[in-house]
Length: 140
Image 1 (cartoon, helix red, strand yellow):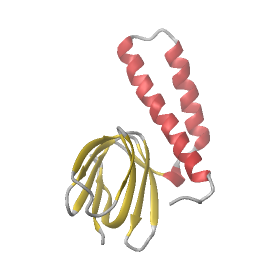
Image 2 (tube, rainbow, N blue to C red):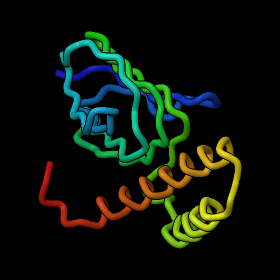
Image 3 (cartoon, helix red, strand yellow):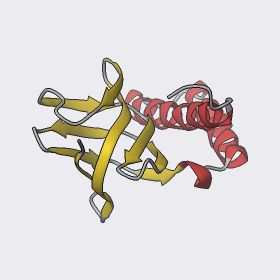
Image 4 (cartoon, helix red, strand yellow):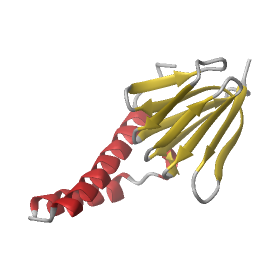
């Protein structure tokens, strides 16, 4: 059995199709969602969004956050931003991370500091996604 998945951001539809399962980082931990999952509405943490379509093709994406809604026959993800994992550039991410860490250590006002910390957590999540994809493929 399969169900419809739609991943959208403010600009466009990222993915729309029938899927067998979806893996995503929820606010309370990693979620693996199959058809007929219980209804759910939750926030998504920055991390890996792994989609297995009905032909068993897996698409791995980095998602910076958003909202996940599960209905009986449809899963919807409203994403802040989405990047294909193969498009993530480790060196660029490390450079951004270093710059953000430097900015935090400077005495910036609290409002700016919280924005910097959010961006830093997203860069760290991107690095974790890259590391996950580099590990041997011995898990489902």
